[in-house]
Length: 588
Image (cartoon, rainbow, N blue to C red; front, side, top):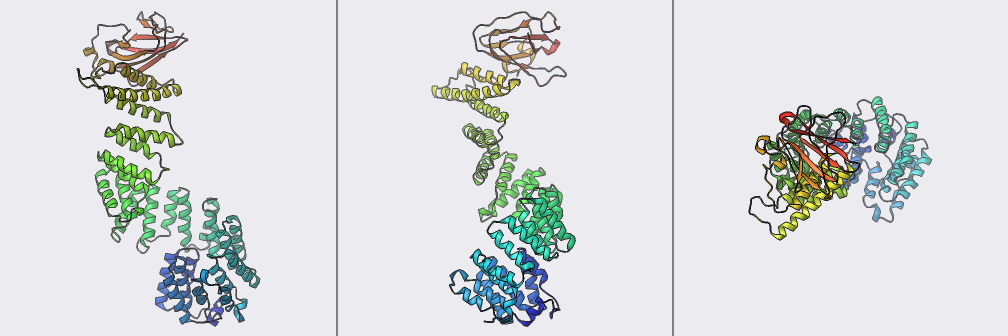
């Protein structure tokens, strides 16, 4: 085993002119910042060309394979490096590293490399420290201090210390060491890059500024563009991320991982046309690429081609052997695609899988509930909506209202659909339970939004259905405004409460539930507008709804609702020609 750095290596460390036609600098830059794929590609090309230092190439190939826990490959290249140049001791250090945790004599073995000229060579101490780093940060720090004693101003020593501190999650201190490395060598790309990496989440602007300095220093250092894209992506600045990554990637030569990432950035940036163009082109190189397939499905769905999106979704779901490669968004888009193709039961089941995969995506529960509602599986729909309300942080009043409507629809679905049909006692109890659930939710809506007619309207409907459990709900009933004014008749020009139901011809109909028995009619004047028409005022509290079958110009959709409670408002019914009567509310 050699115990010295070779004469050639020492010459290069001292800045002497390389004896080789080319060097491994670009590959080493890639390796140092964790770009192992790019580093491997460069190193293998250099190994094949024979124009660079083979021992050095083998060492860095061994290092990147070791970093990926591919020990057999790492051992192979360390050994090849030793054969190429026994005096290049870094390969021997790498070989010892592979079983360092189980070698109690490692320190003694490493000390054999720290003799003669190597005793003053910081590169050897740094290599030993890095060998220890995954096993013992204390031992790594010990050899780092020895390197500092040999070369107190070496940027490599400060970078090593920063890496040790980062491994101990002391990120602020780590960033400080990277800054010191830049102070002693303002061209140290690794230090700029690692500083930016530290701050990419906690202070993205620091990271962006440092990466831009690195790019300004060396516009050809494309690795910086890749990291800049990552910082933008993490902060959801997708257009900037796609633009930065376009300067890093090459559509013709980059590997599929980078091309898939670029297509993803284009998709999230909103440039779907360019993303689809890229997906179509590079899919020819790797037709079964999972990322490209999912993007193809997403984009076709977003463009409204639901049939093609469904075809692509089935292919993706059916041909991915390892389901762990599928993500929540895959299931979400698959479910939405099924829904758009009227496959609601299947859509609901896929939404179930999406929610199981990512319980934090509670908003999907509403979509799942809607799918169950579409196939009239009301219990599962109610369950999904309730889970959303229980788990979501930003529940809106409309969510309570929609859940109330599902309860109401579930209850209405049990009611008789033809005269003479009588519900069983069991069905009647189920219906009432649903309707009471609906009434409770609509009451909540009334409490929180008393100015809205919707809560009153649906409370009125729910309570009328509870009071009239065997009545047939006819879609053409005047009470629901489903029939024309002529069909309902025009002879009754007044408003009257009769058996809990308001009857009014001439285009008006509705339902009222009198909560207190005492009621009467009065004639009142509302403001300055009088026309001699009848005025109906209810002394007791009333929930009341009215539907206008023909809407006068300038008025909103045809439901007007009033609630009466002390101090009594006066409800004025104003004739309006062929449009029947308009309900206005005015206060005393």
